[in-house]
Length: 142
Image (cartoon, rainbow, N blue to C red; front, side):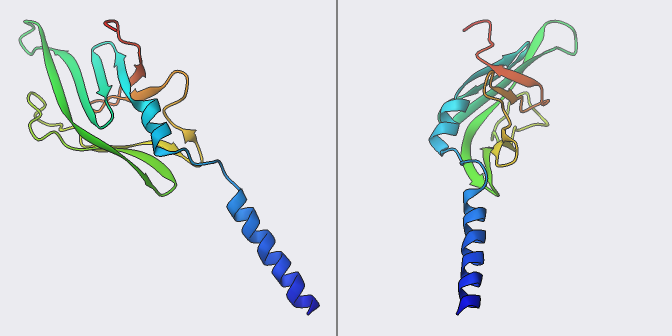
């Protein structure tokens, strides 16, 4: 009986340690509230609404006659997988000038190890074309 009591205590202690450790996982609503907004850096701009995105960049035209806009847009979802919150950007079915990039990709914004990978002050997000770091609310025209 004493062995059973010791074994039970050991098992319950182990379960308590495993379930009580680690950071608290934020709710999807908290993630959504943090990410919705406009992110900019120079000629790059990423706009996130509650469920859609628009990614734009301006590049010098090949003939040096001005700037050309490259853009893609579509829907995104927020999913929790493998102890991480992920933004899943869907492909733009008609990306316009973006012949080689439809912006489809997954971006991890939170995980149990590193917490908020996009920061909290300021909040940053990578451009979907070139991975340029964009800062929320850093646009000149806002």
